[in-house]
Length: 494
Image 1 (tube, rainbow, N blue to C red):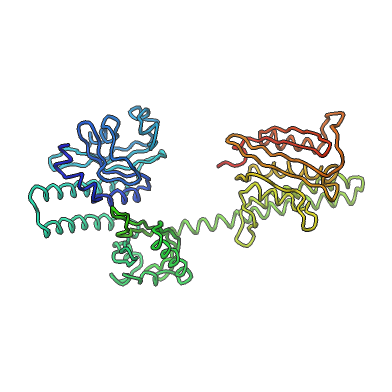
Image 2: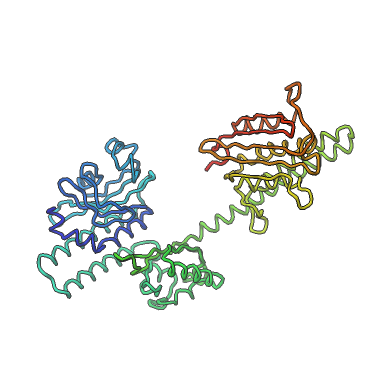
């Protein structure tokens, strides 16, 4: 316990004196866990932590034991690829560390006492230059606070000296904030803005101090001000993280899109003592996304038109060849079902977006079954679980259930006005069972020959070949039952 007692580290941990540094490190490096650690002979102590409940770990499994061997930050892109850590309990069990980056805490005599580090359950390529530099600066700030505490303990500094030490620590923080490319700001607990870094004034061209308090809202585009105030008030009232995209006035008079984020800093009792936030210029990315959406919508619109043209050609051919009309009508209906599936999952504008959730199995099926509604009565009811779908699964699913509904209209339950179909969806961990049950139609019997017609072949093609599932049929007297079993992974890439 020599290092802990020398620097009075337990007092620093209990008062949260270094917690703002770990919060800032986690925010800067976009990591869920950040720690300030001190190493004893047999144990590693966490004297500040964000995203971690433990107070420490045995030294023999700590990453920081390796990090303190050098003077530069140690970075482990993927622990599963590093023989030193692949079997480490911190990797094989909670918190399941895949990425580690730690900068050593260097004392005045050159000894490395611990680290300021970040942990991530996702492997990463590394740190950006800014994150790398920021980790070094934050480690130095943590060491400076430890030195201040040691000096106060050993020399009995009076309140004035302690305030000066705090001012020096604050100066180090402001220096770090001014080197960041983002605009950085902070507020009092009530949301009163009292600090902006140099980047804010460089970007906006506003005189220093002119945006303190509520003056910041005048810098927003007038169409975004009410929305931004609403989101900010919600965060102040609830303590929820603040995040919003809005247009901010540039010093040249134009408005540029920025991403605003903020997190609260809390004391030991959980009370918010400050808000810390950033504004990131995302104007070019926003314009690129809008251009991509326009192109995607135009491409999808043309594909939809192709479906309409093909259906029209089929109908035109049927007029010229009356004997072709029954097959042409079936083909046109299948093309229209494919068109509805494509229209459901394609990119949409706000005006053209369907009412149902676009990645919903239930939403797609409701679109497919809508033509079979009888007045206000829906004749095909969907029961059970909803699942995510995407463009890959929408087409075979549309073909599959269009064929079942078409056959039910010709020969089964939907051939009579009082006939009904229940579709039950049961989602398991690995597979999804879709049970199609017809009732109220003509009495059915299993065909004498198992030779499949074109519609049945389409069902097999969709369910088995394209979705990797299986199909079983049960010809019960009261109606056909079809069970389709499909791997859950086939519904969506996610």
